Image 1 (cartoon, rainbow, N blue to C red):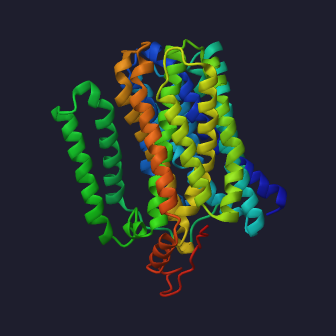
Image 2 (image 1 turned 135 degrees about the vertical axis):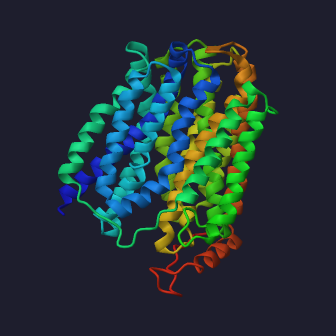
Image 3 (image 1 turned 90 degrees about the vertical axis):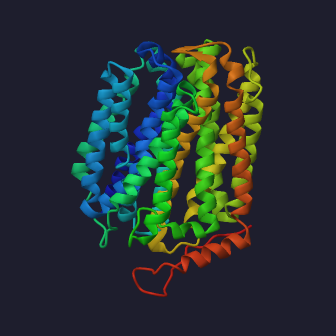
Length: 484
């Protein structure tokens, strides 16, 4: 494959990441407008975000295995078709329940895009240095899409309406479908992982029932039979995963991975970081538009400092991880999230925009520093044959955190809203939600230190020794972890 075609394939893969990444911030900006139009409660707005995140988290690893088995290009094309059709359906949704259903269709397609696109990139760029540059460009796209999302979404919602935020996915998706058919070669894994339907069902039940219980708890009562039943169902699914999965030859999630302190730490750090991100975006959007009366464009412009700092600091963090290890980036990121969340715990009806600006800048810096080392820490100490699975678990953890963040802060802050109306009291009632963001930052800081010690590195080496590289006993090819 020529250099021009290789980078053409990279550009096509980046198109999928762009629409999935921008979808995150675009939808948040539109929440107040679609809430008024569809008469949605705060819990309804939570479902618009979390229905997508839950389905995406549940299917990421399944979609990766399917692509290895049936063909990466074929799976990637199916994902693009489903995501594009889901976007069109979302733009036409006549009611909130149907919008949530169509968001789930989007997520099914989205689960076939990013992990599969990464596999395509790894199989397109064979020279290590060129591959690293390609992955670096790929990673930069998420920052650009996040930065553009609030502005593009604000303009579209203000001038056209909230339905238009889904239209922008359609031409990009159709173009990517055609270009994939023309230029992306087909590839499959020589030995694809077996499907694990039991693990897939248990994981989906765990995420859906836990999130539903948290979101619906304030409306139905935490002691109501429905909510208690959902939590019992989540606990049963978790017990099923712990007891049944170890007996399977190729489980959806190999629980032996969690014997590695860096892997366990990276998993929890990913959840905490995206709890903070999901909670931040959800609360901030409702506060700026519902309490401060900003237009969608005004709220989008006010959010640019956060996205811009994420774009600027993420490459710096990635460079530092390669030079001095993951600890510094995780500590700086965790501390910055704590400071930003703490500033916003005192947000009020007339909080100065200077104070908000500082909080946004500090949060963007923190999130930009935290995100790059997560995958690095997850694969540290793992054999090369298991690095893809470990990376997929880290990606799944990000989506779980996103869903949990929206669910938790919404449940704690819903008192400041009546139906689709965000009352001025929401500023005060959002304080517990901001404390959730702050607490997530504290956990990132503590785990960032604990999971990068020499003791942690030894647990990763011992865990790596449990796996055979390429099926040959006793030849683990470990991905090393740098400790500083």
